[in-house]
Length: 321
Image (cartoon, rainbow, N blue to C red; front, side, top):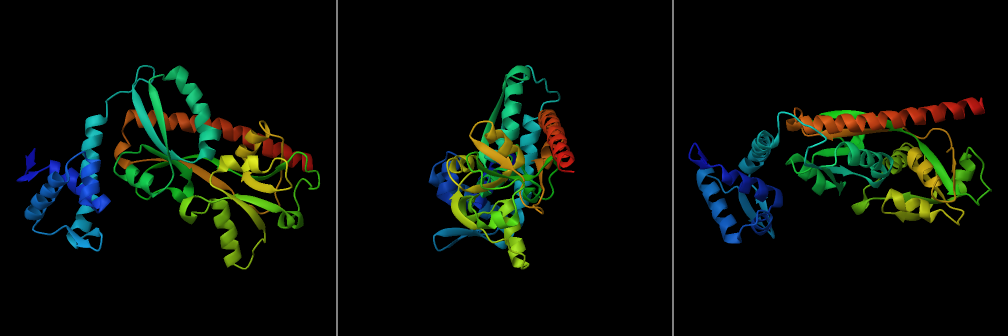
């Protein structure tokens, strides 16, 4: 299809090349030959009267015009995709739909696992694909290849709608055979213990580790001896059992694993942060009935879980009063 003498298929090629910064990688992603993608770039250069992508070392770098075109091209393609894919109504019981969701293993275990059990009954044709957090998934979300992000508030992207799911507190977890620590844990005990923590790929810190870093920068450091750094939250409890180590975990996650492993969940020293979890969808999906239904389902599950957590916190507060 042509519009103002531009083959609109070339916009797909341009969007992919600007993201990949490589003609060969863009060709592979679009299942085209490299010569076909090179031809598309030549036609785009002729139409816009600009090189668009120029070689710099081993990479292709966008020109100033290409940088200005990139968000507009992506926006156009996303609007076309939503127009084609969105249906006027959505019936969960008969719908055939796959949702791609960027989230962490923590949120899969404390929220999505329950949602999946419910989906098997109320919407058997719905499939979920979980993708790991990170820049590739964020890029996929922006181009419409990831439907939802479920993550802490700080990871929400600007200019796209969100819905609050629940607030999460932190607890400390020790092996049930470790009776040398008190509940709540004193700051002196906390500092003296061997810690297990989480760090994602390429040095990305969790919210808790960011909080420790910010306190250190303000001169309020809580000195800890970190002996083990794990790649995911779900690994952490297994590294506690049979040791004198401690881990600071999301409260829901800690209680979940205490039902599965010989662990003791205890209160941390005072002052730890509260984490707010959100779900986010692309602004072009704001009127997609399937997305709206799934967000409402997530919010409903999160609300019921939050009520349980609040009741337990109130009970602990009354017991210690």
